[in-house]
Image (cartoon, rainbow, N blue to C red):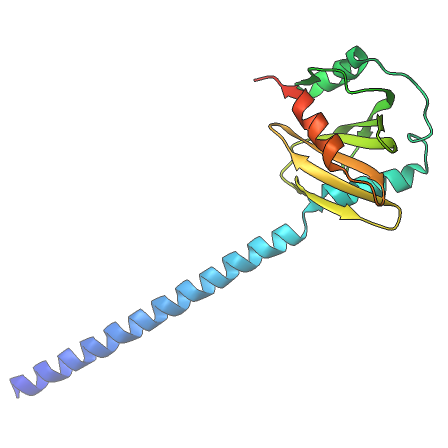
Length: 178
């Protein structure tokens, strides 16, 4: 009789143990799926700087691209100082340099002289709600964003032109304070 009770108790214990392991595995799987889904959903809702820059240039309707002002490197650096940055060397002719609202982030929009004409350049301080690097294009423009120490630089040029040279030049010449 005691052996029978012991055997039933042991069998009941094993069944409960197996059931607890299965429940724990199911709970862990559900938590994993929820975590991965949330991360993917959050990333799909991040602002893509390269796409936003093209949209910004289109929205302006040529206002900045048609500008013919001559900003000195000192004037540009005075604006960049608000972001803790400056250009260490001359970046060529600057036709336009002004602050803009880049999806609720105060940014610097410049139009500079490139090899094939005017180039729109955006200096966008870091923000957790956007993708800081990437590239995009439409029928008229292509853009490339590069993530730096405390901001991203986005270069927008006419479609078919290469952004790499301008991007690398700006990346090399911009410096951020500690």
